[in-house]
Image (cartoon, rainbow, N blue to C red; front, side, top):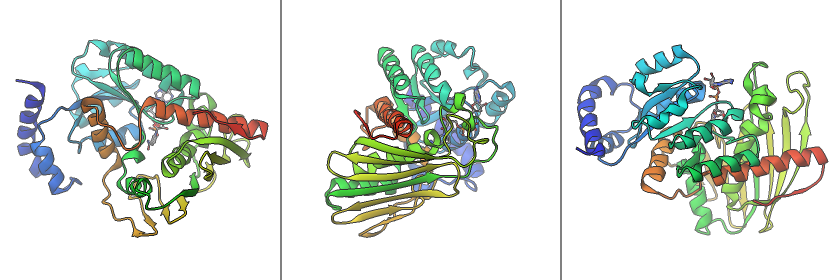
Length: 374
Ligand code: NAD
């Protein structure tokens, strides 16, 4: 019996048992559950590395996936592994720690590892997973800088495995509608993008405020949404950047950890962008795209949703689905079926954002315009 057939039969049995239990809490629509029930295609078997807050969110979201199964976990905390084994029905043989996970190479039950650890660990962990012959999905920012990102891309190419970056907004239906309108010429020539991203960060001892683990401050964590958003909303890569930093709290935001950065992009078409990244203001999550024939406005624009927005044609009404569920099913289709996403999510896409981040930090330091070669 082939793998997908076995998986189908397993699902069938599981569904008969699970439907009465899950029906109260399930957020999947009836149609989704029917599709899932009859799905007989390949399934991507994923292990999550880093069982923190976002790792848990992804694990929960995978439970509603059609093409993805959470089968493994990698953690430095044995108690977390035990809890995940129970909560997500993960077998002991698919559990690893940070010292021994290279042995995943000999585990035929895992196809891919999703790395959801602090930023500075992404590079080495990606390279080790690739060398173990497994596909890699890595959280944003993919690395600390473009050089590291390029090393990750090269390692995955060499090992002949796929490298995808956790850009969940690339699969979000309202975002994709704006991109469709732009590509269809319904907005006319794109003139200007504004991206505001930020929140007020709490606990000063967390890794996000530790230069060694985070690689920077708000820009690495939340500003990257405005950087990436500028590219997918304008539909072009920037050719130059200027940037300015503001710091009001030197104790919380130490040397190399940015509190607030404003940055501006120029594009070859003549379009421009103006963005803000901050750890000092609450609830900043807004995109505005101005074009010759129309506009798109989204607020919230990158949070977990529902995303809200309108264009010159009216309100965006596409249905909200849990971002990480859609992302993981789409990523399974990319890895298993070679599907091409509307907006790239591969390692090269991640490197572009890292080059821009390098450029923004260089522009802050020099006070000068920095040319970008993406
Ligand atoms: P978190 O602090 O909640 O979890 C990090 C996990 O990594 C913890 O379980 C921790 O134990 C583990 N870890 C392993 N080695 C560690 C070390 N040396 N120091 C500290 N922790 C270590 O963080 P998070 O919010 O889950 O973020 C993890 C990654 O996911 C980051 O790269 C972040 O940018 C990304 N993220 C992405 C999104 C998104 O929407 N795509 C959202 C949140 C976080």
